[in-house]
Length: 199
Ligand code: TYD
Image (cartoon, rainbow, N blue to C red; front, side):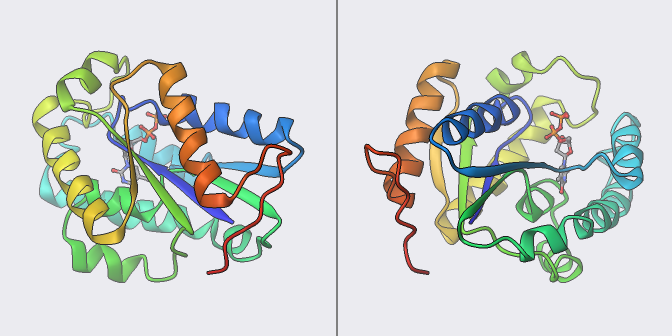
């Protein structure tokens, strides 16, 4: 089972994926967290490039798109080999490239090896609140840019059937709503048994 959390910078994904892992761990599930960009040399290079003032320029975005796709390749085997008893929770996947790097058809093409998650949850938040939560120095963390990215996410969510959760709430309420969404989609019962839906 491969589950992905998506959302603009400041939506709180990294906090929520950790809380979800803890919740599932406590129920005895075999859970692993994945994070994109990864901590590979490509991921490290990406993080460095995100500090560049030109990061949102179209050509720079194309370079980043290629690097994100290369970085994602590192996770391919792990994701493909996951059996249905194991839960992989990913902080971002190729949908981030589709929302951030635009050029949908090209991004799809260079990511065609990437497995589609079984479930995608979008933590949705307006760009103003999101930026006020950001403390980093990445050049993507600005309202004008994130407004466009949010728009792309919401369009994709409709088309692809993502679950949308309001991320402007506090950490506890977001976690509660995430648990509810996961429980009903994965069939988690009181005893903590997951009856995976047939795909
Ligand atoms: P982020 O999840 O925000 O990492 P951190 O919390 O450590 O800052 O990811 C870093 C940035 O990379 C974020 O602005 C989104 C961007 N990104 C893309 O533009 N395309 C992608 O394909 C991915 C995976 C991330």
